[in-house]
Image (cartoon, rainbow, N blue to C red; front, side):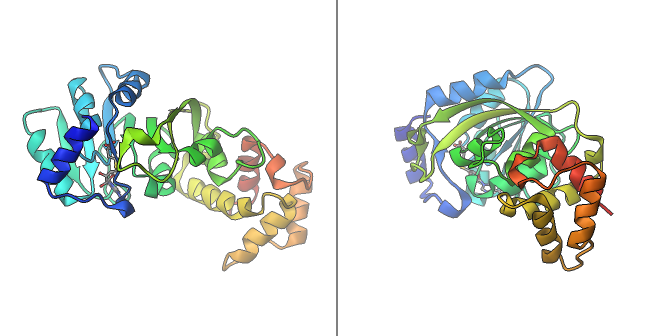
Length: 278
Ligand code: SAH
């Protein structure tokens, strides 16, 4: 689908893209082919697409012959897609909010995701055991954080949480002009694959939930010493469980020095969160 075709469809549907829903539709055949080529779709793959929009990527996915689930929140787009894809048996268009619905079983997520919900979407899809492979177009700034290995500027909550569960393997810049309307942000295409040696602490829902909360709570203080950052985290919790002295003791007992937060390694963040899990 090129820009002219897309504009024509929008006009016929009397559809004005909604910025809040991140509605920027892909209009670049080369970018589409790149997405498909790095997806390495194999016969057994069950594919999840989030936010199919007007179905340009969906069409390519469906042509692979694999089972495809496409989740779309916007009713007008959903009805349009239901109609044009009714001739295919291997695709299910589901109307819903990806953050709220029970997602059908899948092992590959291939999507130009709605960039307005990137954080919560990564949380829900990838931060667990047996997570799928992801081939995603996302905001470039977030890709920078995901691919930052201890570079201070970009090192953030998402660097730690994503790299605890996934290995980021590929990234390419994608021109903003590959989308219509042209988005305000710069974009990257990334591929992330599930880690096969996830820390055993992250094997149940409660520990994962605590870990994500803990990391989210200390990373705003990445430039402080770890004891102060953890102290601030507990002070911000309603039920502050540990005071500063206890935090220092626990870390010392486990041979951690009171260094700046950003100098710790991914595995150390996991081990440290385990020390404070109760
Ligand atoms: N993937 C398409 C469209 C990208 S625009 C393409 O590349 O052309 C993002 C799409 O996500 C829009 O269709 C928007 O309606 C949809 N969307 C936004 N928030 C969503 C949510 N919470 N759940 C499911 N779909 C959502």
